[in-house]
Image 1 (cartoon, rainbow, N blue to C red):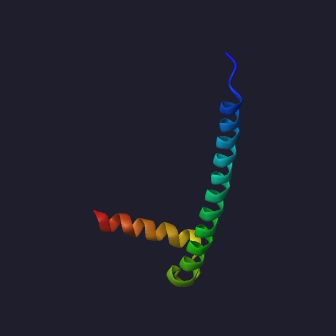
Image 2: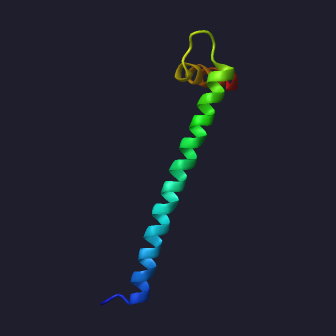
Image 3: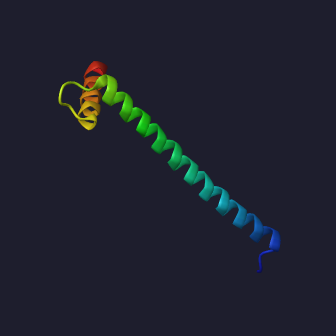
Length: 67
């Protein structure tokens, strides 16, 4: 059974919208990560500690405080 032109057009639109949403989502998440890393680096790292090490330390401290 052949699809109508309207159904095909709607599928193309849906694909483009989904792709655009994915690009926007990636951009927003990347921007958030940059802001987060800058904040951690500026305010939460201890002497000689990298951003990744500070994040892991904070995560472990958070888990300990929950228990």
